Amino acid sequence: MLQAILNQTRNTALIMGVIAFIGLALQKKSKTEIVEGTIKTIIGFMTFSIGTNWLQTIVTDFMDLFNAAFGIVGVTTQPSVAAALALDNYGTEISVILILGFVVNLLVAKFTRFKAIFLTGQHFLYFACVIGLVFIASGMPMGVTIIGGAIVLGFISAFLPSICQPYMDKITGNAGLAIGHFSSLSYWLAGVIGKLIGKGEKKEKKERKSTSSIKLPKILEIFKDYVFSVALFMVVTFYIVVICCMVRGQGDLVREYAGNDLWFIYPFIQGLQFAAGMSVLIYGVRQFIAEITAAFVAISEKYIPNSKPAVDAPAIFPFAPNAVLIGFIFSFIGSLVGMGAEIALGSAVIMIPAANICFFSGGTAAIFGNAYGGWKGAAIGSFIEGVASTTLPLVLYSTFSTLGVAGASFPNIDYNIIGGLLQAVLGLFGG
Image (cartoon, rainbow, N blue to C red; front, side, top):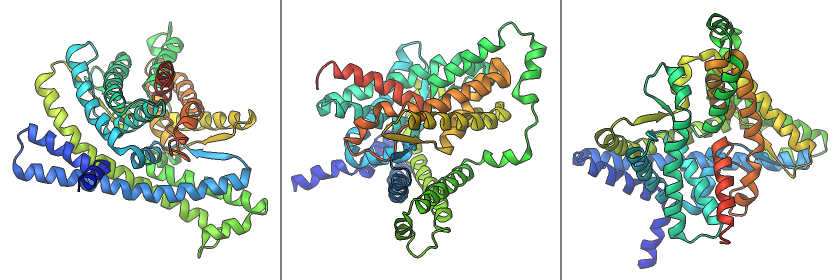
């Protein structure tokens, strides 16, 4: 009986439900609201798990075909898939790091000059996975992993948005918002580059060079929908891999995976199924995170004056919509350059670009670059972000793969720079 109870600590859906229950109870919500919020949290995580299983199957098939086509190991740069693998193996540690990290974030905002309160739940979850995996891989005890991980997560979640704040104020017109997206170091760098480009130019000249003055082709507007972008990208990628397999005499393997589908229809279906699985997964994440985050928002509003909500990247897209599309294009080009460099240098593992990362992270980097540097700042900032998104994951991939997190990676810049530094520091202790 005791063992059965202990086994429930590995049921992440129930753990998330308990966290939501405590948060809602602390707000003194009605019994109906507490029950509703708790159940919605559990269902949200279960929905997330359904999308996870769906994506894992597609990714596994894709990796096998990619390896057969090119003779190298291809890794998708999808943080949601990597997080799902991490939660399957270390759900308890990551869940506790997540909740305590929220608490530490509030304490840092309360007692330091870093006033950002991180509200983008899915990114908070992904970073909890990265930090937890680094601690575990370093051989740290569970208590050290949880407490140390929460402190790192909470501090970074307040610190990184704060260093981007001067650029956020410029972009939003001092709207009081912070950026809650863990590619903050690339956004900060894009802002610095933009400032260097725009330095010394007259205001009128800068305004003429801003992305807002550029008229983009209408056809590019279809990429504003990231689900469509992911679907199109995955369909094209699947076709490239499948055709290469056929050319290299791996037709039997393709037909085996295609099953009842015609081999030339199979890539189209798989690409769309990947986008569908991604939609299910993201919906689940947003549902269960929303309930948990709500408790901390209410607490912060009451007890932490002058705090700034760190919101998801799309919240600033309306301030420079042309920059978003320019960022998507140049980030994608940069990610292809990064992948090409890995192939040219003979890397045993190749990071495959992800359309959604190029759209969100690349688009946001472009907005920061555009703030002072116009379209040049947007293009350069997003290009650098793209290169980094397919090269930096190599820093931690081998470590994570030993823990069962293989075939997918955490591409966002902050995960890999902070995670890499953390791994180096923990390595000094010889866990």
